[in-house]
Length: 438
Image (cartoon, rainbow, N blue to C red; front, side, top):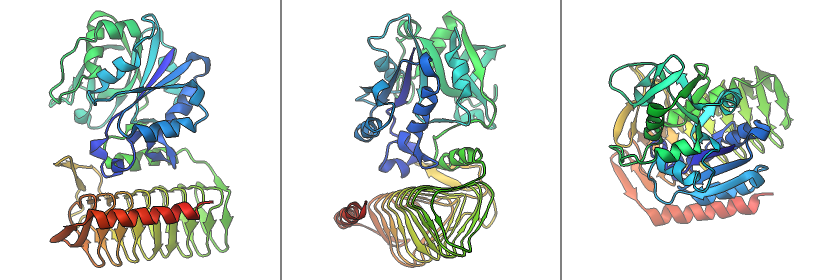
């Protein structure tokens, strides 16, 4: 049996995170989501003889990552040159395969709390789909079932038929996929694999395997990155310290501290917390529960981080607060930069997604700061605000609305687009980082 990972999507709803990295390389505990998926498939042993990864957006970065993995000998890459949807991606992946062969299909934005459910699907003798119960099914494809068989997938229904939704994991016979490939474009202009599955379900049995509620998430929206990392953090057990700890440092709960990391005196760490390689913490820093800090980052003097995901080579050297936020690679936060995470009225925080205001459902949600952003001293960023990659925020600014990429923001009312200056500075910083790397 072949496995197929659909890793070609643009991740438009995840911007600014996906302005500089493809969605499959978003980190979960500092490890790319695609690496997690490859490990799950590797755990299926002889059931999977080859993994086909469909690439598209930022394909070079995905291919480079795959070339460095231990699974590289088992991986074959297929390119989806035009983003024509999941149906088109699957059809490209199964080209040339035997019609009697089965394929295990996995969407590239799916994170599972336990990969055991993949074995149940892979071991099934029938066409199979994974379902999971969620609180709000209106944003997903809802599974209409008769006992344990699929009747139909209804995409983002206005009525609540069921809380059981499509989890983006399938086992299908290649011949059934090809026999039902003649589907129209959807209203959003794509060929949807769910339409192929619906045609298959009309003709033959499609078994529904259920995942445990809360054991699955798709990285469709920015705050899902925080939730996926929280899910992974819940699996931490004990305190693993591979770096250097100065004393006195207070550590409680489940904590992982990676190789060559350095935690300086009077720092307070409340687990679960994950600290990657070559990270510097403190002195007098505070890391609160559900914090993830990735390779090469600096969380310095009197900096507090709470329930946030800090990507690689982020510098917050002093006197900052990062709450319920995502900070992408290469960001430099000036002294006193604050990410506000709670509205005055304490209602759930909303965020602009592709021009529409979307309720996150989270009472506390800070900001999403794109890669290589620089903030001056005493910058305040309001809840739910996104700052595009490569932007600069001048000292003292209060950021109340989203900032486009490659923008210099002096005040809330006056944003100056100066692409050349920002890109020149970015190149200079990259050279410094490269020259200082071991």
